[in-house]
Image (cartoon, rainbow, N blue to C red):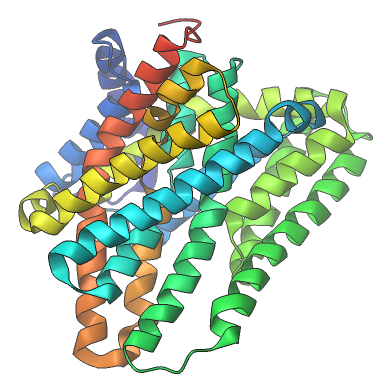
Length: 398
């Protein structure tokens, strides 16, 4: 009988996640692999737990918002002066390389521009949760490679959204729509700029309020209130909640640096159990059986995405004259794929539902391929992060 009690599920998940995560950690794998395995065992393997889509969305939205807030906190003035320009250049180059290689790779096999454009744009997204959790697991957030990785996974999703909105507009043209400036330019601008404005506004309010607050409990309550308000308003206005929370964190840390550091340390202290729940939920929703059914397109997508991320990161790093270890290992730290990519794949089905069978087939194919390949990337991604920061000498504790 499947467990539907969320409180009981969280208790079981934390216990099993801690035990199996500790085992995988000692096996020199990131603990995240253990959490995902627990999720697969509880869900797809033995069907012991069932969560509604509403419950899942709450957990995913909150976790991604919290992580985006932490990522934003790394965008200090000092960081932006030293690595900001480099991070932006590398992000743009590796994002475009990933989009181009996946799109061309899939097209050469399928001769289907619509499917190629959709997979190419979705493949740009990097999972901030998996990447940040792996860095947290290694206690490796103070080195150059770690900071560069943190910045890029934050920027990546903003770029992915832009690519996706443009790609979906072009797909609609392929399926019969007329080319629209509104759909290709105005809509993504509204989504991005709206998220930025929302994050800055709430970050400013939070920074002002923080000056009046003392005590660990009050700081934690105020931080979570700001993050939850930001996520909720972003979803209400159909903005990117990840971008909004990232700019919330960036605004906050730069307006009140000293107080901000205390806030971020307190928020980071509650991350371990949240990471465990998030990745177990990810495991619940993964379907290993899709790996069998995704076909050759899925393997082409996996190969092209790895080449695009690693190759783009290498050439981008070389262009900005980054340290040799950044050039060599940065791409390995950018392979995770999860919530944002799956969310965009699900969006395809909704966006193309009015185009009949062709639209429905494209939506189903996108969801199947992205869901299946996420199984692969959520396992190799954190392992890649761990290997990269280890080789760069940035692991404090193994």
